[in-house]
Image 1 (cartoon, rainbow, N blue to C red):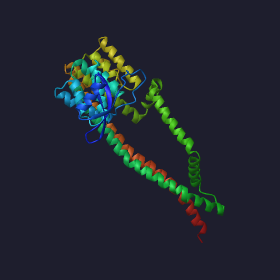
Image 2: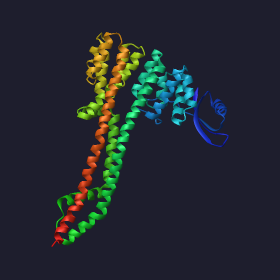
Image 3: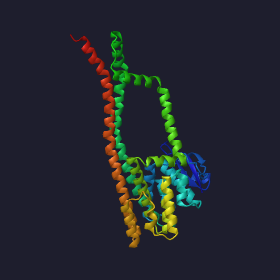
Image 4: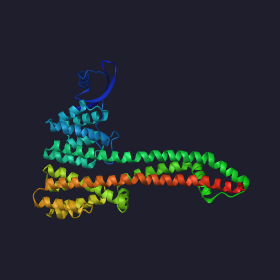
Length: 403
């Protein structure tokens, strides 16, 4: 089976685009016609495998992935097979990217690929924890529960990101208006004041001289500053794609108080959530720790997690192996230890994951609360400085003309 991209027209003359899985081009045309459409163009899509260090250009974002995961969770929970669920999602997706993801993943399944591999190849680059969870669920045969858990996790993360974005809208709007007003003052009022002082021979206040010098430097070198900004963005992307540089960056960020705590909590939440999914999928603990280690983004944490998995394979207890992981909260370790001792490791791991995610949400809310007033204070200081730079010469002029 192959994936074909089609362009077709409805009986009302509306153009439709999508993808369809078929044996050949004739079969694809027949399937499009069966949907009540008149095919205009049918093109076979390439299905080259991913290579190391290379990602597909057509990626599905987190919001679309959340919708797709929820649809799969509902359909698999209703008793459909994975192939039938993907076909149903393709037919009722309502979004081209989800339709394409479902169609290409279904084609991969029909060619004998595993669900995780088919989704990863079709979607471009799934998050490591997502692919690990799907792969573990396939081995245990509990795919519907894994999709349900992943859907809840993605929806919760989307809500947290939306809260942070909403908190940034008002400060960003105020900042933009303040910058526009300041630019107008510096380009219209400030030059007039400078001209008046030049005619009187009186020196400008130091604050006004400094602000005018900064404004003139920005105006005269705006192109160089823009290129420098682009270079910083490109450098950040390069660091993120280079393992050695990314590890060094993460090591520095972990030493920053607020950012370091946030990174540790994010890594702990991802690790425990994946560990919970894999353990509840009834896979061996050694496999659970291997899958959980693969979802960590910080290199030094991933190395420690791999050491913990190796220690478990050598006969150490789970609690002793996880004691090597500094990013796990002591309470989470205690829950896992209690679960190991009471033979209820699955439920206790789930509770530890929920606790870690709750702490992460609290940390995100704390960051959100800090961002808004901090940005307003910064904008207020900048505006006050510029206003004072304009008002101080006016006060000096008043003292000059006063009797």
